[in-house]
Image (cartoon, rainbow, N blue to C red; front, side, top):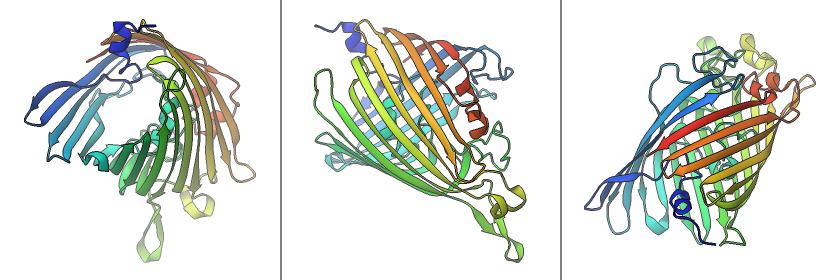
Length: 392
């Protein structure tokens, strides 16, 4: 069956939050592309997307992004490139643009590319296949939001194989999914502005994957990743005492693996992902006066998703997502969260889409919010959103 012109036009962007950058300058081997989006989304009560409203209010939020891609040929075998992307987030009370991605690098063609700046580590490559919803997916994974400063990365692709290596240098106040008690010293208050923010000493990650040629309705991709981080735990204080930094975390290790089949923007798409992040925590006497009643813990999750994109630009998605928080110690949590996300969108033309998305509690344990220090309280709610986006 022939695909419609509309389906072909939107295929490259249906999976993405932004379209490919429009080239605004291209001369003598140097090019500049610009892209962006503007959203307006109505969120239901208890969604956690409240902006300046009370915590349980329904409301309408606006969000925008603006980005630039730069590329300049250095020789017949190398090119410099850079990206900067800003976001005016829907929960930004100051209504400011904040950097989302910032990097500069060199592409060596068949020998791979290196870049440095702000981006996710290599684990993102393995968890991305199930990150297909607007806001209420990723309920079984760690690392999808870990955009960090001070990153160095290398990537290579060829013969269907992808290899990614990243190293994170020492930086303060960096995003660490699952570090629910890392609130810049306010360890008992997950609603503090620093929730899931931790000072990193160093971090590493590696991922590898293979994508086959099309099999029936699309290619099959198999991906795996492993990584970890060491945090800024302690400093030498006066008289040889130990002074702890703004977090209770020592380190973590993280692994992820996924399998996907098909192309998200065209016809049937299936994917499943497994992930676990293991945290080493200072607690009790180790942390002195600021002790918290938690021990080392592991966050484990599984996500399974299915999507179908029709030729007229309509796309339907759903899935099943599970997360477990298992703490060491006799009084630690062993709690589960279960979510079923449902999403329907219509890509009316290459620039404009509308959607509705819902997340349903599928049996989340009553202590799951406490196990995540309140950060994932919405797992126990049935919530929805209705949105529209203009992309350029």
